[in-house]
Image (cartoon, rainbow, N blue to C red; front, side):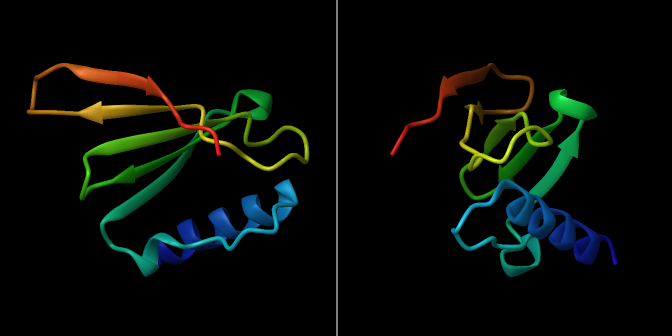
Length: 91
């Protein structure tokens, strides 16, 4: 049930932002976890890619109708090791 809620949430966010790109649910790839944090214009979407140990952060999820772009990435290394923050590449 939790996967269904997550998939629906991501789908609705995709529709709300007006993007023409395909929205992929976490259920399609069990190595990917998604979540939404915050409220209002400060809402952030995170996508955790377990295979690469990277968290992708999308800011301003609830504001505007522009396509969402990745704001930055958090590279996770060994437990209790440093977390490297880098800007996402723009296409």
